[in-house]
Image (cartoon, rainbow, N blue to C red; front, side, top):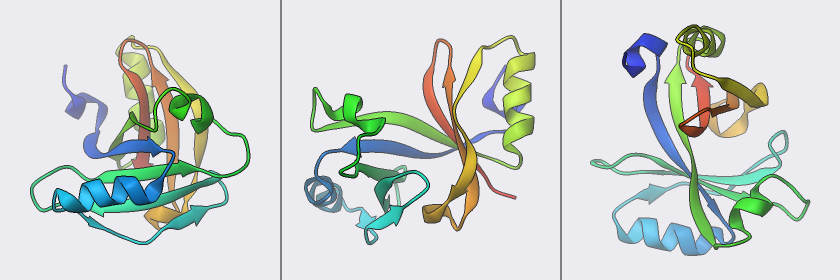
Amino acid sequence: MSLTDFALHFHHFGLAVRNIDSARKVLEGMGYRCGKDVYDPLQEVTLVWCEHAAMPAVEIVAATEKPGPLDSIIAASDASVYHLCYGAASIEASVSAIREAGIRIIPVVPPKPAVLFGNRLVGFYQVKGFGLIEIVEES
């Protein structure tokens, strides 16, 4: 079995941070090009998209002043890779394929439009034995 069985391909790492500027400085020092801060009101986070010609993309994710799910992630550390993101033509089809393979996948945040990705749908899922994944719909 491979990720192609689930019609997924790697998209980016999600990096939860307390301080966007510190993370941006480190990534830019590694040769990443980072965009501007983008506030996503549906996710209630501030995001920065960072790309590199030879390394995987990184999405910097910072909590807002409101309590939210990132609080527990950055409580013990100022920054942590907390999700892997995969692209799919259909979130529903990929989630169904994972379930049909006998893997437990639990929705954490149902698919909703994401400002950073041109309002394409993104959903977050806890995958038993693997961790938190985000799936971004690319169709």
